[in-house]
Picture (cartoon, rainbow, N blue to C red):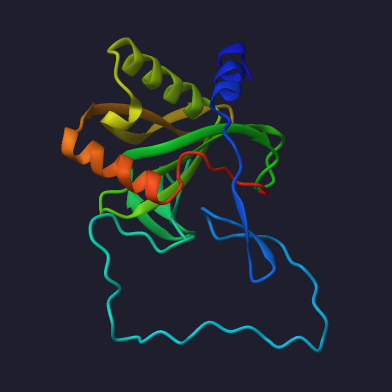
Length: 208
């Protein structure tokens, strides 16, 4: 990891938020249970009420199932963005970035390295989450610098990620390149208010 990436990693790490829910330590952003607390066998089971399958929750604007942002991946072998393991969404993806951070970790059987993590709103107006690694992080830093030169912020723009083909020793692969265009002031304000209401800025995973 070069010096520029290391500096970016240090500057973008933010504070951690967790909560105790039903005696379990839970990540307040993702809903992930971080630690189970053991209770006695005599303690009564805890249940949430049944929800009607015929009602539509009242949500205006950005769609977010609390604790469960839509999970995107950049498949650098297939050359497509996808939701989960199999729902392909194409080579190009617009993202209205709400918050981001970088960190170092061993994930998905990869050696320890830098990762770029984002919360964003996708083209279907749903809160989403994605991780990038490798050269894709360098490409985001380049975009970040270009935006700073214009005295703007990443959140004021619509960022588009595009998987571009490359050829190496082991064959073809893809990496993510980024571009951006201005958003509208009204939309930016909506994103700011949504981020604040859902604690999506000063939050991070406590456990990966």
